[in-house]
Image (cartoon, rainbow, N blue to C red; front, side, top):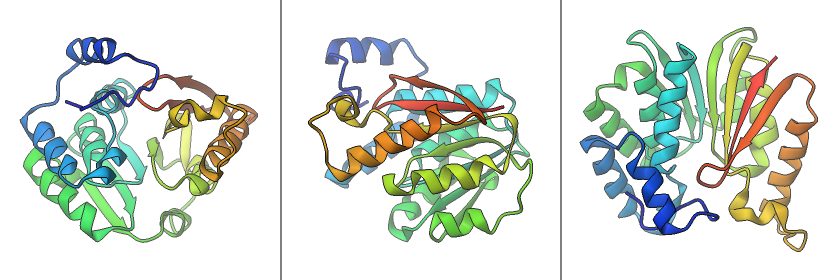
Length: 220
């Protein structure tokens, strides 16, 4: 379902094999992938199909009922998370783009998950800080502006129950995090965030080589 693998370390052949041996996107998801692709280069912000399948499986596996997402774009990841929640489950989506999330809203309706999703259009840090603290969420997904990652992480972590999971996208940043010569601003933001999480005694973390890298962070 992708023109090229987001996983920079996989050959197209291995990537295709992995996709064919996982849960396939259904008709609604394929339509959303195609509509997002027509946006042009910005479509690279959409999560890979295997990430979507992972989000659904993980939400179901941990019995998540309350979830939060920072960075919704055209709604593929939120659709996948919502599908992993029970009928009375709820997903809070934080984004700032009416244009992109208008596509998300249409596809949430098509997929039959719109009733599970609340979208708040505002800076995510403001949305998160306005929430009561306490054991509010079971699952979180962060995939937004990289300088904001530490803030989103801190605000979400204090609102997660013990054993809840935070997933963070793009933590390998095309492999640049492991290249000392890569000193651009985005790469350094990701490096600093990864270092912060790895040293955080409040959590356990494993970094998975899915797409552009996904950290799975467990609150202790």
